[in-house]
Amino acid sequence: MYMVLLGPPGAGKGTQAKLMEERLRVRHVSTGDLLRSAIREGTALGMTAKRFMDRGELVPDELVIDMISARLHDEDCRAGAMLDGFPRTVPQARALEELLGNEGLRLDHVVSLTVPEEELLRRATGRRTCSECGAMCHLVFNPPMRQGLCNRCGGVLFQREDDREQTVRARLEVYEKRTAPLREYYRDRHLLREVDGIGPTDEVLRRILVQLDVCR
Ligand code: AP5
Image (cartoon, rainbow, N blue to C red):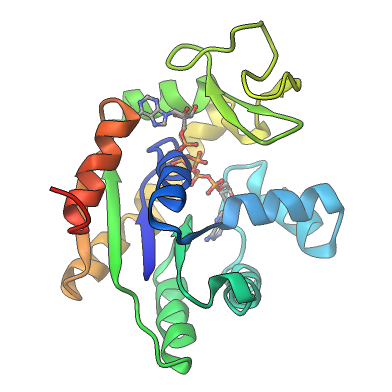
C-alpha cells in the first residue's frame, strides 16, 4: 500500500504515521525526518536544506524528489510506504505518480488531516523531541514526567528550530499557498479522504482506519 498523509504543520501526521506503521506494517517515510538526519550528518543536502527549513520555507523540489526517489527504491519500501510530508507541491505530486508508475505501482490513499490554526500553533510550539530516541512529547497534551527529559528513554528534550512561533506561522502560510492545493489535486483523482485531526490520538487513528476500510 502506498499512502500519503497530508496536513499542515502540527496536524499530527508524524504521530499518526508512527501508530499506523505499527498497525498496518507499512514503512513510515518522513521527508522532514530524512532532511533532519541529513542535517545531523552534515551532508551537502543537509546543509542546503537547513537554510530553507530554519526559515520555514520548502526545500527545492528537485532535491526532495531525488531524496524520496532513492528512499522508495530501498528494500523496506518495496511492499509499500506511508509518505509523511511528501508531496508538498504539485510538481512533487506529479513526480510521485511517475516514480510509482515506472514500477507499475500507484498511490492507493491520500489522507488529509484537518485541524484549526490555533490548535496547530499550540501543538507545534509545545512539541519537544528527544535528542536520544527521537520520541515526541508535548508540554501540555503529553507532558514529560521529569522536566526536560524523555518519558521513553530519559534523553534530553529539545525544541525543533522551526517550532518557534514565528517560524510555525511562516510554515502555516507556506502550507496554505503551496501544499493546500494538493487537496484539490487528489480530490480530482478520487483519492482524497479528509479526516478530523482533533481528539485523542487513538480516536484520530480510528477515524483514519475507518476511511481506509481497515476497521469499522
Ligand atoms: P516536517 O518535519 O514534515 O514538518 P511538518 O509537515 O511541518 O509537520 P510537523 O512535523 O511539524 O507536524 P506533524 O503533522 O507531523 O505533527 P506531529 O505528529 O509531530 O517538515 C519540516 C520542514 O522540512 C518543512 O518546513 C520544509 O522546510 C522541509 N520539508 C519536509 N518535507 C518537504 C517536502 N516534501 N518538500 C519541501 N520541503 C520539505 O504532532 C505535532 C505535536 O502535536 C506533537 O507535540 C504531538 O505530540 C501533538 N499531537 C499530535 N496529535 C495530537 C492530538 N490528536 N491531540 C493533541 N496533540 C497532538
